[in-house]
Every structure is written in structure tokens, then in C-alpha cells.
Image (cartoon, rainbow, N blue to C red; front, side):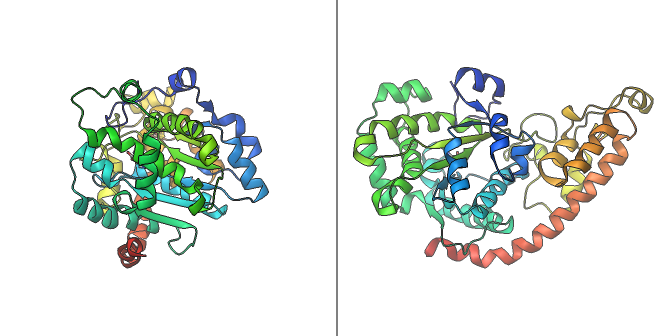
Length: 364
Ligand code: TRP
Ligand code: SF4
């Protein structure tokens, strides 16, 4: 069982074996200009993504839904989802971004006003600064608690889900509070509502998420099929990305500041943090010259792979230099930290510009 509200690290291979998630790699050849995260295997799995590839190719309508639970600060790992959204937006997608204030209230005890503040100051501001076009008319950002269509749909869909099923999927027990039990139904409605008549009717929909969200995806897909005759839902597709490793080697987590580079960090702090990150280097310089480093175990390399280097050739070059021991961690780190600093300098300017827009977007 996967618990979407815990912070346990998931085993990616197991997901593919046990839960029927398909390797993303097999589809790459069919996608025109795949996103860098797809090309580099960071988006590693999917369910029914073929439908989305077809819609993109035929330029027919499709939707993307991915929410955020406003619970704390955004770190650099969260950037991945925005990068994918930007890519989908360029492909003409209708994009829905629910702010899961009902979920953060029920699972984390954060009240609605606080959630709204976090959503605007952190999430929405960052999303715009990272490149999402806020003026695109097919972009919809909303608070779960204020969306009547989603609330009503959740209630209707809940009619065909029972407690045994919720226990089996999420491990809920007799003492779980009912708001928490109900929260996944809101998420199901987040994902399915673009397909109801008022919102344009059935259309392929993809949900790009981390694998911790897969229980919600499975529930949504089941429910979509149960209501097939009523709503004619097209079973939603999904993609799954690997999480970025924390600076100290475990999971990157907003609640553990030592593990994370926050999007609100100053360029200098971000630079310093990367310089202190765990690398795949050897005990001594001599050993590293002889045996080479291990980029697969290196947080610095991961930052280059996920975020800092766009050119595949340039990245490959660093990979080989590391492996053959012709570059040492000190130099490599300094160079990467410099790139990180520049990224943040640029990003912070964009953040300042995005602030006003972020304030107004929920009132539209
Ligand atoms: N549960 C998600 C999280 O923890 C947030 C979320 C809400 C979501 N609605 C969604 C994700 C719809 C994908 C699709 O961050
Ligand atoms: Fe990581 Fe660079 Fe050291 Fe290789 S040389 S282990 S990529 S920091």
C-alpha cells in the first residue's frame, strides 16, 4: 500500500511490477519533442499516456490536471511539475490546477485562509515565475473549497464508493476523521470535472504526479468506469516522476530545511546549499582520479540533470568526465553552484514580477 500523506520513499521498480504502471521509456519515440524530464527518464512511468500522445499529435482537445496541497514552502523538486505544465501549455492543453485546501485542512490541519495565503504567495507566484502563462484562457487555477462544480461532482461520485474500499486503498480505520476520508473524493472530482458537460464534455485527461499519488489515480480510474454510462468519462491517464534527492542524500522535504533548496532562498543561500550537498565522489582525490566518481549517487549531478543543464550533449560530457575521473568534485560543484546561483538570480526577478498577477488570479 502507498500512503499519499506519509513521506516514505517509494520503490519505483516495484510500482511498475506490482501496480501496473507502464515504463514511460517505451513511448518516447512516439512523442514529438518530448519534455526534457521525459527524455531523461525522470518521468519514468504512465498509465494510458498513449491517448494524450494521440491528442497532441491530432491537435484535438485534452486536459491536464495536477493539484497542490498548500502546506509549506516550495522546494526545487516541486519545480518539476511546473516544467511539465508549461510544456503541456505549449502543446495547447486545457490546464486545471486545484489548490487542495480541503485536503490540507483535513490531513494537515491547515485552515482555509492560511492555505489561500500559502497558495498565492508561494505556489501561484512560483508557477508563474517558472513559466506558466497566467493569461492563457485555457488555464484554470481554483481553490477546492470554492469550486461548486467540483464539490457537487465529488458528492455524486461518492455514492458508488464504500468504506471497505477506502480502507483497502488508504488504510483508513474506524478512527480516521471523515473529512480526511472524503478528501480523496474531492481529488477524484478535480480530475474528472473537466469532462462533465458544463466543462466541455469527455476529453482525454492526464494527471502528472509523483508516484505517492497513485492511489488517488487508481481510485479515480475505477470511479470513472463506474460512472461510464452516466458521464461517458474517458478513463484518465497519468504520468509519474521520480522525486529529487535531498541535499543530504534522503528525501528532499520542506519540513526538513537541511535537505531542501527552497524557491524562496536567496541566490547566495542556494549556491551555498548546493556546495554542501552530498556527491558521488571518492574518499580521496587520488582514488577519484583512478576510479572516477559516481554521478548516479550524486545530488549535484541530479540538479544538473533535472534542472540546470538543458543541453543533453553538455550533460553527457560532464557524466563522462565524472566517470573517467577527469573532473573532481570541488570544481564540478563550484561550477554547478554558480549555475544554481544564476538560475535563482533570474528566477527572483521573475518572482517579483509575478506577485501582482498571483494575487488577482483566484478572483477571476
Ligand atoms: N493530493 C495532491 C497533493 O498532495 C494534490 C491534488 C489535489 C491533486 N487534487 C489533485 C493532484 C488532482 C493531482 C490531481 O499534492
Ligand atoms: Fe558529482 Fe561532479 Fe563529483 Fe561527479 S564530479 S560525483 S558529478 S560532484
